[in-house]
Image (cartoon, rainbow, N blue to C red):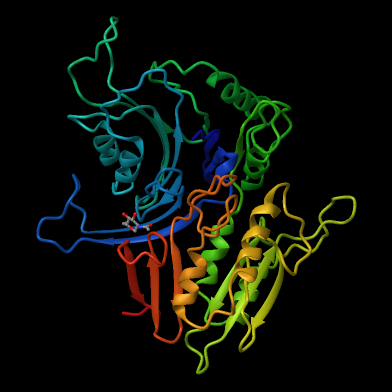
Length: 431
Ligand SMILES: *[C@@H]1O[C@H](CO)[C@@H](O)[C@H](O)[C@H]1NC(C)=O
C-alpha cells in the first residue's frame, strides 16, 4: 500500500496545521472507514510496554489493519503516517502497523521515540510520522522518520536490534514537506519510488508561495496540475494509486445510528455531499410494534447528458417497503434508480436472481431460506460462491435475521451444513 505526499507546516499566530493526502491502490477505494476506539484494561497486570489502562482513539482505517496506520488522533497526539520507500528491510523486524498502533498509546513525542526505537527488535521497514502534540500548553509539530536496524558494508545486520529513529521539530514559521522518501536517515528508496514523490514535492514547493491559511493548504493538497504524478491522485498518467475519497463505509456506519428508516433516508441522502457510488441496504425494523422490511438503494448524484454533475450535491435514494406475503430479492444491481452497471457486472447478478426465482417455490420457512442461500447448482455463477467457473469471488459468510425467533445466525459455510461453524446472536443489540 503506497501512501504519498504530506504537507506539514506551522506559521505561528496564523495557522498550526498538518495536511495529508492518503493514497491507496484503486481496488481499496471505498473500503476504508473511521473508527472510534475506547480501550479499557481493568486487569491487574495491564498489557503492553506502556501499561495503559485506558485510551481514546479516532482513526482512519484500512480493512484488516490496526488503527493508527494512516491518520489518527488520541487525547495527546494527532498523527499522520506515511510509508517510506526503503531498499533496506528487516524481515525479522516488528511489523510497521503494530508499531504505528503502539505509537498512538504514547502521551508525548519522547514516549513515541522509545516505542518506535523498539529495543530488542526494531521496525521491519521505513515509516514517517507527522505529529502534533495536543495536550501540551503550547502545541508543537514534529516529523519522525523510522528505519530498520543498520547493516554493515557486507550487508550483515549490526548486532544492535533496534530501529533507527530521527526526530525533527518543525520550528515557528517553518513550512515542512515530507513525501515517501527518507530525508534524514540515509536509506535508499527502492527503484522507481523516487520519481513520484520527488515530483509532488517539486509541485508543492515550486508552484505555491508559503501557505498562510488552511484554504492554501486545501488548495495545495488538491493540486492535480502534474500530468504524470499529481498531488491529488485521481488521473495521473503514470500513477496507479488514488487519493482515498469519502467512503461508502462511512455512510453505512452512520446508517446504524438511525432509529428509523426515515432517519436512514436522511442520513444516506447526505445533503451537501452525497455518496461516492452505489449501495443497497436491506433493513428490518426492530423497535416498532410491528416489524417491517425495507430495501433502500443509494446512488451518487446525477450527471447531465454531457456527463457533468448536476449542482444538487446529494445521493439519490429509493425506498421499497416489502409487503406482507411478498418475497423480495436484491442482488448487486440497481433495480429502481436508473444507474447502469459497469461492464460484466450484469451476468453474475442476473444469473443468481434467475436461480432464486426459477428453481424454488415461495419460501415458507427459515430452512427454505438456508437452502436457497446455499444453492451452488449453477455451473458459472452459483448463489453460494465457492466453485463458480466464471466467478472470482467467494462467499465469506451467510447471515440470516430471523425476526420471529429473534435470532441472528452467521454461517461460516453453506447454511445447510450442520457440522460447519455458525454463530447465533440475539437479533437486538443491548447491554
Ligand atoms: C461442512 O462443514 C465442514 C466443516 O467446515 C466441512 O469439513 C465439510 O466439508 C462441509 N460439508 C459440506 C457438504 O460442504
